[in-house]
Amino acid sequence: MFRAFRVAFAAACIGCALIACAAELPSVSKSTEGAQLLVNGKPYLIFGGELGNSSAGTAAQADSILPRMARMHLNTVLMPVAWEQIEPVEGSYDFSILDHWIDVAREQHLHLGLLWFGSWKNGFSNYAPAWVKTNTARFPRAVAADGTELEILSTLGTETQKADSRAFAALMKHVREKDQEQQTVLMAQVENEVGYLGRGRDRSPAANQLFQGSVPAEFIQSLQSHRDEFSPELRAHFDPAGRTWAEVFGDAADEVFMAWNYARYIQAVAAAGKQAYPLPMYVNSQLPAPGERAGEYPSGGPHPYFLEVYRATAPSLDFYSPDIYWPNFEYWIDRYSFKGNAVFVPETRLESAPYNAFYAFGEARAFGFCPFGVNSAQNNAASGTGPDIKEVYEVLDSMSEMLIPAQAAGRTRGLVLHNNSPRPAKTVSLGGYLFEATLSRSWPARSLMEDDGAMIVVQSAPNEFFLAGAGLTVSFFRDPDTDNKLGGIASIEQVERAGGKWVAVNRMNGDESNQGRQLMMEAHQVRVYRVVLYAVERAAF
Ligand code: DGJ
Image (cartoon, rainbow, N blue to C red; front, side, top):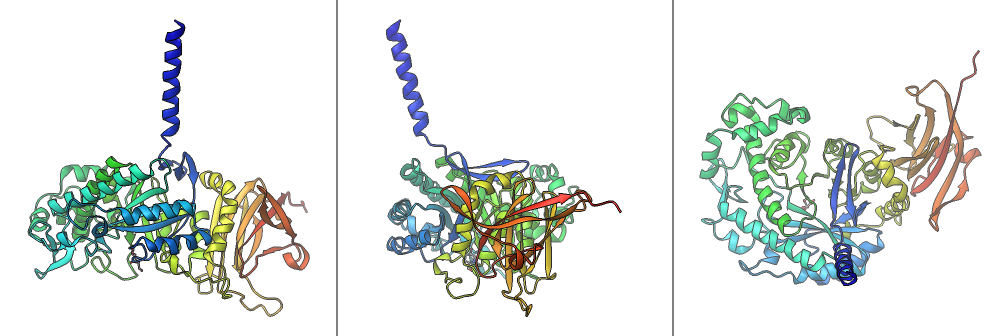
């Protein structure tokens, strides 16, 4: 009896130890409030950056780049992994470069996101191995309207899809074997900015045949069941009563057809990768420039117009991401803040990133943000042209303990202002108050001190808010939609995190608060301010 108990007890302990060893893999958790990236079971914010395309092609580059990234206060680096690099000869894999990057990332306490440059990178197929590029019979190309074979692999190459899936699965299997315990690698992007470049659509024989047939009924049904979530563009182009692509999708037929084909292909690649190692997987999109038409921007990519096609077709993808290079950053990130998505910006302009980061984490409640070409960053602050991304990340990181739950509870806001913003002031509402921001001006000359400003607002308690940012003057009002009370400032302190606590380093009043009326942020440096507001009944006259 006693022996049986001992054996059972020992077996249970071994079981516990095994469970404890098998660390929880990174995952994306979605709720009605929003979504979070979980790392070791806890919500995690990516203060990241994406490397230039040719920055991770050798092992030695890791030694010079990653320590710099750590000094810039990044916690995650997105790095390309090219198909041609890991499978130069069919069926024979070489992960030595990646392994070194993982080792150096660990030394630097950095995480990595892998960008799978497989069949497509920015629409083209230049990262496919030579054995793929040179065998157009086995790996067919997309064909242009004039019959030219393009340097773009067709989405309808069955062998191409299999070969890409095999290579990606081999990559993920290798990452699992090397990294499952330490989890330096957090996630993988499947392909890069896919979409057909050229007029219309792929006109390869296989594509023509498929396009002339009926739209598969299950695809139409799947779209139908999400009709409430359609983008305005899809809603305007969807007639489920039709049969052919042209009948169902009207003049968006070419684009939707391409989106469906890219989504089907990517689903196969992502599913193969997930089977080997189920990390979060996503796709990124090159967004249309103003006035650009499909085919000028990659047609059928996962941009918001027809993203529903991906959602209906590629269940192995965890989220969809915008690469935002256009000035209307807020518009594009807002289009990816839809129910069921987890907001992550894998690429954005480095120059405007220090400002847009506040909007991304505060307003779009992103779990991550990555300026592109981060390894070529100049230090803005040092050259006197406003904050740099390092300062912004330091400050947001210092706030992350409160920021993460506040994001999940909808208690954050953010805004960005530029000298050429359509309105010189922007207002956000949170916790019963209005926060009205204008760009910082000098006193008494009233000239602009900086062309840009941005802030994040985090509610920490009733009437207490942490504002972080630069370049703004903020006025506070009671929100008339809440009640008719009189609102005002009780106190403003500039605070810093020290020893796990917020410490006031400057209590701002008098001239430094425009006589108790405004928060006057530093114009060029990112600071955190704790602002306590009050609301009182108005006197009855
Ligand atoms: C977007 C691409 O996804 C990146 O790989 C890079 O080519 C940038 N554009 C360059 O601006």
